[in-house]
Image (tube, rainbow, N blue to C red; front, side):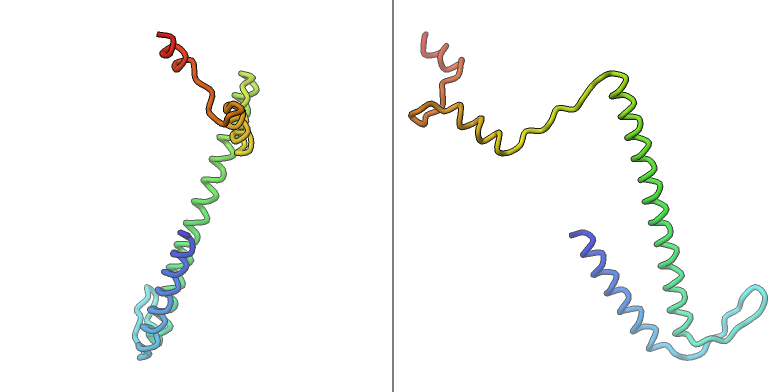
Length: 124
């Protein structure tokens, strides 16, 4: 759901940027380090937006790569520790097994079996 909202917000931002760029079509003077260039403002706006998107995208890709590398390293450490200690993770119970286990604790009358605490309190 988070990805969908991000996509919707990105499309809205792109639409607003495109409308803003289309409204501003007058030529402007851009001063660079080595000279000056006259460009239509629409190209300058769209170029800067594209450059910003590329920069943000490259940081996102780098962050994902770094996190993936960290996960691989931690997984390797976990495997090493498991091999050194002989520990294995217990398997999680499946929902069907829980239902069957709950069904077995009921007696033939459909009532749950009394626990040890219930038996101790009834004897007193």
